[in-house]
Length: 162
Ligand code: RP5
Image (cartoon, rainbow, N blue to C red; front, side):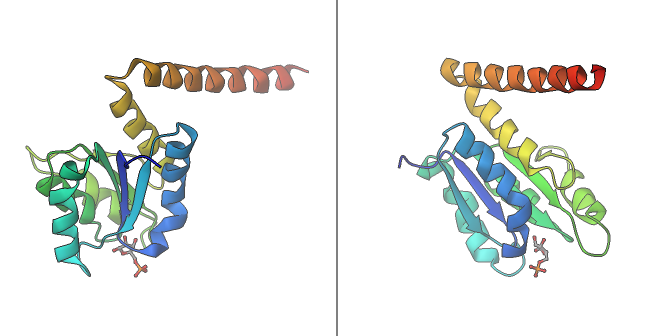
């Protein structure tokens, strides 16, 4: 297996069911990824070393999922020059609105590309598109994926029309 290009991290193993969709997208596009539990609050030193070293290890994009007081994506973004995509994980009490607000409201200068609550699939796709922007064969893969999406809508319409 080649060195990972996408780092998929999350604050707790309880985030894994949500984050699996990002892992699946990387697998679908045959982009090597790594998965790690990195908590901003429970393992802060691990978070700092992960974020500071990721680009030196060849990671190109980081996807960070967290729920509740979801500080992981923003803190990682503050410590790495790599693009960070934040996934607000649905939370038990506030259904992920707390996660969304924690992740999306970043101060000027330290962006986190935030996807919709629970939408790790889009985080995976955005990571692929970032990698694809300077790789023609991957751009073709993205276009083929879009074509499939297009086709699936047409097929649903055909079924409705029957
Ligand atoms: C956050 O706290 C994690 O990202 C997770 O979404 C949330 C709850 O964690 P658990 O202790 O319930 O697994 O750090």
